[in-house]
Length: 282
Image (tube, rainbow, N blue to C red; front, side):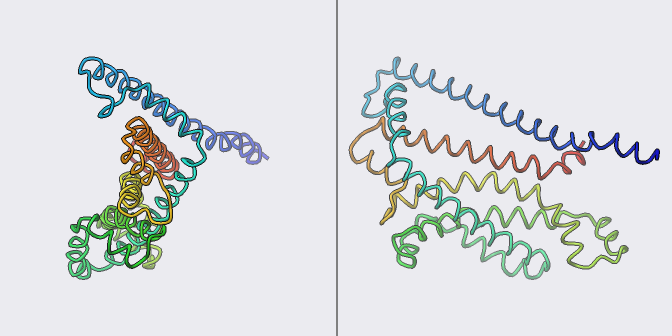
């Protein structure tokens, strides 16, 4: 009877822990949003001060107010939202494909040091190729549609994910590996219960870096060959050709905001997934 009462008393505490963790994560996100807004306000003030002091031509650098007006028009435009959806699709698909390939290759290479030494030079050589030089080749292979851009974006994501995942998988200590062997753990159990957990902090660090790069890759791909799809990169090209600097800065601001949102989403997911790692560090 005493055991039942004790378990009943501890149940509210157990239910409260996830809620408390969610509240802490929400507060972290709100605090970061507030800090980001403060940085934006300071940047706008410095921007306006530069315009007033330098007297620069608006065709070169517009003032913040025309840019904000153009941004307000763009946010209410269905054309801009349709272009945003195209760029978002390209970024997500490219990130998912590049990350999946990077993780798979890292897992295979981590199983053999000899295989890593044989394959790694080719991976590094591929990464050293300027991605702009690959764009025409991808257009020839995959056409002017979305998939040539997705493949280019995947090349931005693949390398940082592969390198970090490999380092994470190889970060286990000899004592931990010996403990798993003494426990008669299979190779799959060693991977699932030890090496995979060890690699997660490294993997999310790569996600934070490569997710924002996906936007860069998407805009670059659209600038070099928009084809049949109209994304934010295509709008950048259109505003540039008409010397609409306010509209151009508006799209750039929109891309920056998307980058901040993507970064916050990855950090929020990492906050919940890596709770065990924070406890271990403390």
